[in-house]
Image (cartoon, rainbow, N blue to C red; front, side, top):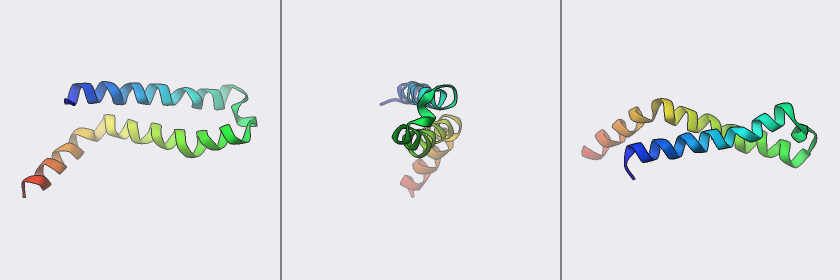
Length: 70
């Protein structure tokens, strides 16, 4: 998978994973215990990690390329 396709996939993952957070804030998701647990402990970390990858993923890929050459 090339870098442009990877970025598009990560962007859509980030956008789609953010939707349950909106339901937690503005909807009744906070009152449903299993859904609230999923949003707090699964969805939020996925959104944070995908956002960090979109922001600084190029540096991580560069570091892995350097480590692979040595």
